[in-house]
Length: 203
Image 1 (cartoon, rainbow, N blue to C red):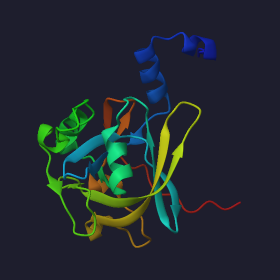
Image 2 (image 1 turned 180 degrees about the vertical axis):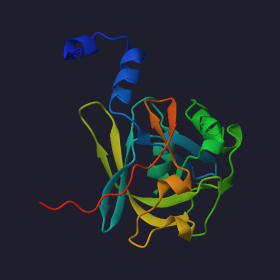
Image 3 (image 1 turned 90 degrees about the vertical axis):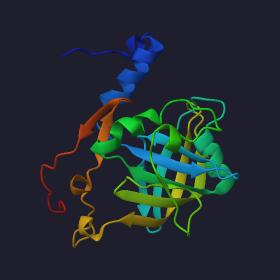
């Protein structure tokens, strides 16, 4: 086993280093993030940095990278205060991946990627109709990180669309039955296979 030092990491070619650090921690859940601007233009982005913040109130976090001067998704969230998170299924993962392309703001990724926007009366942002788990959120808190210019957006869950059979008696949402996939790095997609559920660990 080889030790790759911080110095060696710093000397890696930029894209190589990004792939290396992005994939070394393993698979992460991947979502399509839906937003809309004030003019009604729908936007989609692929995000693999969603994390649980709390359950009371229900809060989820997303990390936004400082990749472009104008991040359309983040700008839309700031302007409207609403967005959605939608799981990605094997049937449309290639279309979903295309949403990571840098389209100009006037182009809807829904149209470019041949995905269907779905609107619920209670939220202005679009859901992805093809997704089996659709989460509506409103902006709760925004945390800029001095370390590297990224932004953490904390959202409060305002509603979740899913079939009741995906929810176990104890509230557990079965991501395997839902068909949710995961990603390692930026472009390697995986089908999730369960190993089993374990009882609550006690000391």
